Length: 483
Image (cartoon, rainbow, N blue to C red; front, side, top):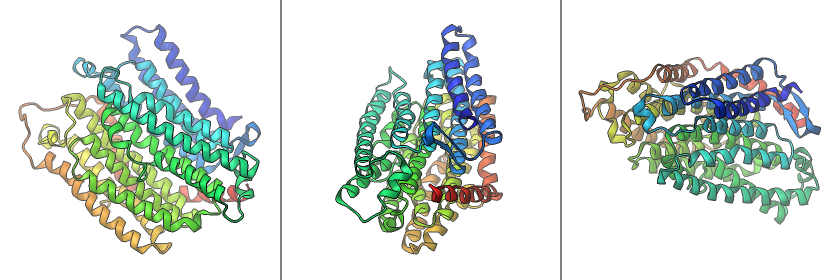
């Protein structure tokens, strides 16, 4: 029973926030954000210290293993920082509150329910449980994207997201239905064993449907079309959460599909994965060059990062899994550090265009430095963590014999450096639009930016966490083989 305690803590915190919000006055509702943060910290602590790394519940439909353990830590960490970054927007000064997104209790509880879905997703061992968990993780994101009811852009973002999300869910559930019909079971391990024979047309159709839905969750080309509009229209803290949480959930779902359901077939799909990786990173990087809105800019940056993640599926699982998990950690820290600065700037100025960042190094040099470090990490500049993460992924593709893909990835990293430097140029070279108006950040947001920035640098200089991830992956592969 102890393996499900972190999920129960997050669920309990979400309901506690809903109930507290009903009885609190406007003045006392400021405690809701600390309550959400404390609940996530408690769940992280229990998951890190007291939860065993293996175990099963509900007749094997819910299971804990080392990879699920890592994913849950990352899910909750991303949500924790999102809560901290949302405080100024929801509970900040009067000028910020006027542009705030409101409904504190509902907002934080919706984030927590989404996290619960992601945590169940990575522990699911049954088709029905897997799909329900995926929807529990995804449906709150639709709501969050459309949170600003009086903003047409937010409503448009939510509508586009829910329509394309429903299409992706339909692909997945139809694919799952075919797999159930072919295997006669909903257990993931049983399906993998019974469908280990030669290809059949029905099996290929199921694979195509499930992988198309997975591509939507990971923003793989050509299933990326929702990202830019949703990122731009959603409230900025929600965009930050979408950029990391949806990517983490998509990668977790890809692990379940490619390693547990179709594990025997993945080595034969290397060229297909390589082509999708090349297309995704190239389109994301090239289109990002011409963006002017900072949130659309980060959307195409996120699309390109999805292409780098795919490199990990090209090699053996004992190398690819830890490399992808480490890069996911790096991506979460780097992307949230960048979005922390973007959220602060939007709160202070109400502006979202790259040109609006002119002279930021003069009006707030520490925020400009933090944003530059985060963007350089995403570009893969040494000695920052993004460089180490990309090095591991590039090495896997090279060892698998895809040297042409490594060359494509290296060229794309150079392209990404060019468009990230566009933002740096505005901050450090262009004069400020209003030199007499220094911009200041709150203590909570400044502390969050400092923690994330230190993480970006530390993970690059001391990447020992990769060794721990690699060690736990070996135990996961053993359990996968037994299943």
